[in-house]
Image (cartoon, rainbow, N blue to C red):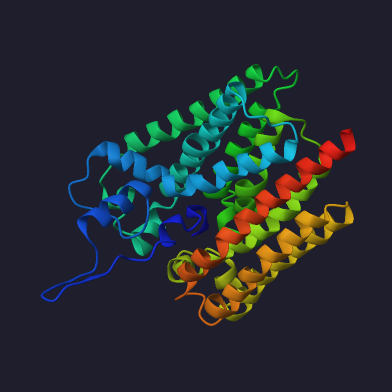
Length: 346
């Protein structure tokens, strides 16, 4: 389901055609997928340290690291110097390896039953790693993320530990998303939005709080932008319909059916971004508004070319074609807000 953020499903299988053989994947390709936590990973003779890395799904760290960059840009106060680079790297480490790694590991732990149906080769259902080792990893990653948040507040000389509290809140959302009794991922809209906001709003807030002041207006903007993240989350639920239905998980494709769910998906992605583009125009950021419009257009094209005709078969192609434009739209919005902040202070 969705917490994986479909990182493992965004990479097409590597097919090599030779005159005398037909190999679906090279060993190198399988090893790379294993390290990144992608589907199609090599499952033979894997050292334990590689399994620990695989559980954190490094391929899913990228959106969080990017979100920190967007937040730094939105602060309007980021300057290129050694001190700021250090703060940015620590914030990215907190958001990516530690807290996203914690999120992915705890999700795999509570998903071990459904993974036994959908992805039985994964480390936990396959028995490749012990339960105690998984629990230890969850604890280390959580404590590491909290420590990074606390250190950032000290480094930035915050009177109020805003970054530390963001890490506590994000960790709590990650837990209730995956773990019973709440298990938001089984609640359709609630789960998808919790995931989307975690991948868009929270790292943005952390980056902005590190280099500037986190204000209610930008928090509201990013919460609204997270509705686009909800749509992205739904995209990744299409591949898990069979397992979700067997275990009674009410993902959007299960609850509404494929036809309705695919239109809900593209609607949330497109309407949200169009709203933000018009909002930027309304506050006088016409240049960045036009940039965002230009970045929305190829996403809509990809939806009609790949996703809407067959969301189950073409989900990987659609995400590969459309998501780069969405993430650059996030950066454009961050730059627009940073410019707006500087203009107000001029």
